[in-house]
Amino acid sequence: MRIGIVGGTGGMGEGFALRWCKRHAVIVGSRDAQKAREAAESYTKAALAAYGNTAGSITGDDNIELGKDVDILILSIPYEFIDDTCNKLADKIRDNCIVVSPIVPMMRTEAGFIYIPLEQGKRQAVEMIAEKLPPRQRIVSAFHTISEVKLKNIGQGLDADTFICGDDPGSVATLTQLVTEIAGLRPVYLGPLALTYQAEILTPMLLNAAKRNKLKHPGVKLI
Image (tube, rainbow, N blue to C red; front, side):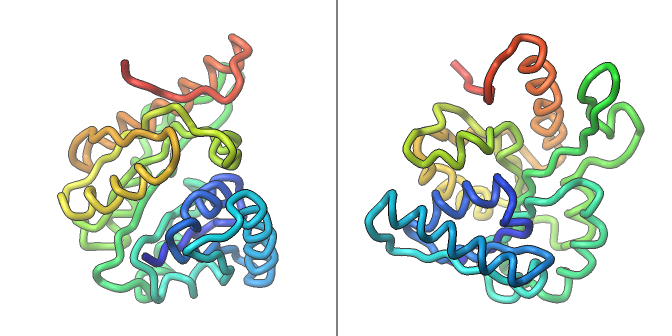
């Protein structure tokens, strides 16, 4: 499977690349294609040091160009970049490409981290993406509460759950399989895409709890 990660030079992108290159061809993206290629080289060295060899690979490309020939597209970008990025990707990605949103609309205030749609009446991240990159059935959400520090530490499992939302059973099943390939991460189906806000809103809650209680890299696990 070919997996493209828009914003792949960030912490989450690095973690995904290191985890999935064991079996898949991963393309990490950046607004600067050269930066993406340099990151891919660094990730590849780390993966080979950890695994010895892999059946997959890690390469780098421009954020938009990488969308041309991927089966899965992960949008690892800030909330405020959704409109611009999706507008540029709209005529690049294939009709059968599954688009995954781990994006959380949040900001930091004096009181703590807040969920922007609740506090400011703005739209959920995944609903903006579904509008910009139709059809809606190919949009899936996941990974909102995953620690990028733990994700990058490929020597350890995550010991966490991630909530998956989506309207199409096939798209959900494909992403669920990818989730199970990340050691210690359990996929939990939450429901249709419209319920994604329930997963998005957990991230600012976790960050606030972590700061006030001196918790390192918290996650969510249902027991």
